[in-house]
Image (cartoon, rainbow, N blue to C red; front, side, top):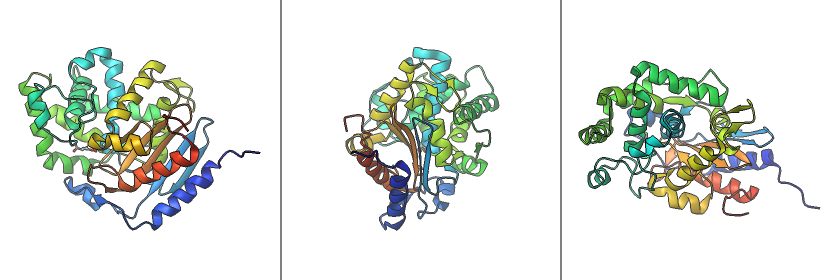
Length: 312
Ligand code: GLU
């Protein structure tokens, strides 16, 4: 008789193994406030199709979701303007670092995809159009509350201020796009909203909950609400698979085999379609800016559960 693997047991074992490892990557320092994160932290939360929650390590501790917020701003922007969004931003993998500026020049200010910084800034600009920055940010935060079914999620103002003070590279990207007419709003407004949504703090459990609609054809089975049509969920997953880890996206697909989105805070949201929504967090990054242990933990989980989108 074949027994289904026990998800909670596997998650506990992975969390224990990750706690013991000495290779933990390097915490991001270019946003001063993120440099304070403790590299000893590790958390994992998995919510399966039946809504069972398996957690290990620091799964309940909020961390800076950073670029993982780009999955949700993309979802929101597509809801607002639909396919018109693709006039402002492409959907091809970049093969460049998350904050690269070279590609923007020869592609006339149109970013490769919505997950590199330039692309995410263009997406934020779309959400901002017709609104005041404070309203746009309120919309983004309310959307997070809706998808995670949790109104306790907040923006870490200290992280937002820290990035606003030091985000010269993102300001360069935004100004460059503005020069090409890709941004419609004042650069300072767009950047303000961008820095703040990157500074949303969430735990692995909250993030796994927020990702459920992507794992279940656009609908969050926990709340019963349809967030997006099934086709859109599928397409967002495709973009996550191809572009979710910057120039580490190929390696992530090879090793983990799931759509995923990382953030420099050390979090990763990964989607096993029809099976589970998964969030991991470990602040130390590899040299492509993705969570080192987060990726290793996801590789262990998908191997043991047989969850790769490329076959068991
Ligand atoms: N707020 C960060 C930045 O713009 C996000 C980068 C990331 O998480 O990869 O630099």
